[in-house]
Length: 466
Ligand code: ARG
Ligand code: ZN
Image (cartoon, rainbow, N blue to C red; front, side, top):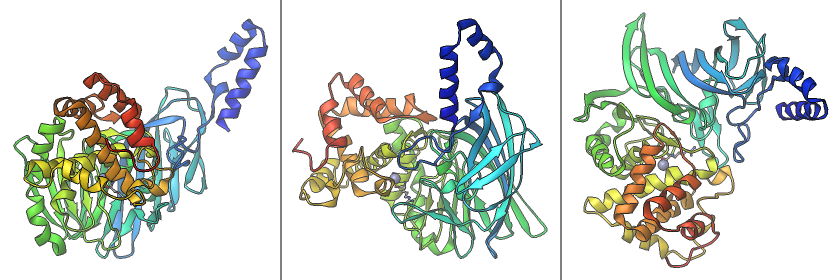
């Protein structure tokens, strides 16, 4: 709807005399205000995110009762309009909205699937900063992804496993639910005494009263909504500060504690190793959440503090740690470019193995390359998975990592590691795209790499021997 209105207005101004057109424009931004789009135009998830504004900050306050699965909360969003807006959407899946204000004035709102459509009393001017308050409650549950996996708020026997990649953030808070919009976060989560609520960033405080404990967390560096967590359970907690001054908070389900301990102990050395290779760790906080969530089947690199469905092995810890640079700090702008996350995190596993007396990256590459052309590894190219159902497929992870290995062989170790560090540094706390990565690699190496990336990222079928 927004688009047609804009086009119509341009058509009018184009046919009237210049002076009149100037008058028309002078009539003010309100006359040009249109509805924000229902999505940012991601081809794999058309309704993810919203048009017309950017969220600066989320302030999420809620209580959760694991006994009956009910959540009751209030979300305060600070946003800036990127176009003049008659109305805009937030993403919210399920849950009931009990009140909504824009700049402290009650706003009209309706629901349309995952879209929460907000019409403020007065149109918003382009560039205007505004505040949205949403009261909401209900029994949150996960969304089913195109590949059949669950994501979002996943209740467990003692709390909830909360991981939102790619679209689950909207199952527990009203969000601009696409990675293009990063924001800072404050969380204030109240749970029954004896449960722990773990979110991203630094623990600001914890207090217990009337049998309820409130945890306050702050994620200061910008974060994509899919990387937010508020995992709840009966956890054993360990806190310490690394030699680099990073605040570590580990929360572990006692059923996983014995298996997890030797791996979690390695987190500081893994982060130091990765910092040597990729540049300084991008956040002030770190840690691990090890849940016992048998129906989940994956871990997620939730920002600063990955969440695991069970005790991870070391390779998985390395993978989720590498995502802090690749995915979390440097974030993709379209789900189609998921190889920028998964290819990089997988290649980090290979590098870790190679540099710690395990199989070398070359050996892992050779083992994969030996797979026949009919193998699932070659089913689709990692730079163009084709649909949201394939974003976590083997080609994205393995052939994505193979692409980086082929790059490394082509440009040599010095240039290759310079590229990885420059990538993390230049796009820190921001976004990066595949064309930007290709350009960077070409600049750093002085080589034309168009053919290499075309073959490994975009060409269907098994590539010829590199
Ligand atoms: N990014 C996660 C990892 O590879 C995987 C997330 C899978 N999510 C899902 N809904 N299946 O570390
Ligand atoms: Zn990953």
